[in-house]
Length: 340
Image (tube, helix red, strand yellow):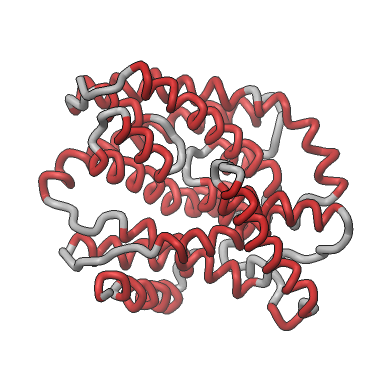
């Protein structure tokens, strides 16, 4: 119980510090950096997976509420950039797997599931079943998400002067109570239905689908209030930082450094594909960067909401990337059933 409660005051202190120093995204980056610092100092902490999934439902409703009939019609024009997602995913695997095997001497299952830019939980499950090292996989993916989420806001501000201080939604007091109840229904109902049918990313995609149906039918006219999205940022940020709890010096020297090197590779690949997309006029630069940056689906949705990017465009590309990785993971798990 102490390990479960410890991250909360630490994360709140991070929010306060980021607000005091006027740093960007205090509700997301504050908890990440504070919990990361505490983990490296040896403070025992543990995440609350149920609360984290509940907060992810808020993001699902926020994204689904933006899918209006006009946005839905525009999604048909995304196919040129969507076709680049499998190409980029293949490039990541072809470069990432040899990188982890040759430079860091990982066995194949650990190298493969470390390189694949899927969801952290999914890659841990499939990787462990295939004989990979779950601790290494956890640190590699936590480092990937951490670096991308921390660095990307500064890139967005530097290149496009993105406003990272704008509220991510209207205040709760300005939204009708009935509409707030509909949002809660979409969040809980969508999550439960998606989980019951075995949908991947159920905590985000289930609420997203129900909220999109409500928005397209005119029942839902607003996104979740700013307070709810700030709360989602807080829990997601705290979860990323807590992943480093119990880390040892050997793991820092090997796995975290390996993850940082892989992040450099990912940034190079991301900017190559963003340049292709932007150069051919397939999408604006900011949307292209958010769509192709291989961070977490929830974290990229948060950034898209805050900077006012085309959320549907960004989420569509991340859903396709994660779907490709997850569909390929069981195939490789069967081919390589044990650690080499």
